[in-house]
Amino acid sequence: MTKLVGFLTNYVLIDFENVQPKNLNVLKGEHFKIYLFLGAKQTRIDVPLATAMHEFGPERARYIRVSETRANALDFHMTYYLGQLVTRDPDAYFHLITKDKGFDPLIDHLMLENINVRRREALADIPISNISKDADLDEKFDAIIKNLIGRGQAKPRTEKTLKNVMRNVFKEGLTETEVNALYNKLTASNYITSSDNKISYSLPR
Image (cartoon, rainbow, N blue to C red; front, side, top):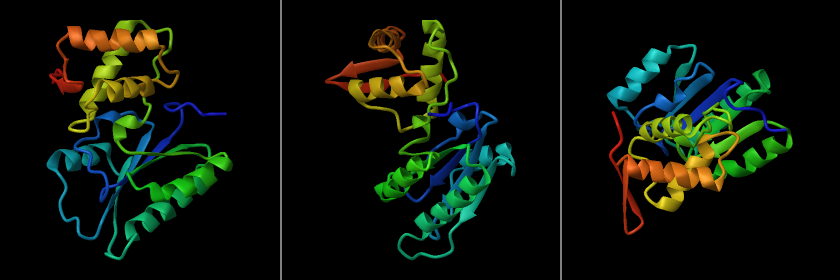
């Protein structure tokens, strides 16, 4: 049975060689713990990201620096720490933030062992909203706005991908009627504009 994200500890392992999030806003919930893996050649990170890591504190956010430049060195480090965390807290939820599909066979194996682990290509792909499916449209709209803002430059750029993102924000999903209503509300609020199926954003700050 799928465990509910948000009621468990969520371990987020970020492959910073592969994915460079601009901020960590979507991980502000106390149930998130962050492991940021830095490659040997990565000597700098953006100030907002470093500030966010500092604000989370050592109990919730940790840097893992890889000293070797050999092929797959960072991947092996992530796999090692994932194994440690699964052994220590097997009922938790684990997110590997990477575009590297080489992790998928391991993830498939762990899922067969009833470990709740997924690979995601962006932080904002983590379903973080605990809003009930019975919540009103305004509450769901606010959650969508927060998710899109948290994506920084990695926002969906077409209507199709935006609607897929909207469906995945909520653990209990959305009906197609709700997806279309929320999309229309984004348009009516001038938060998005569409031209030739390309989405542009003007979100609140």
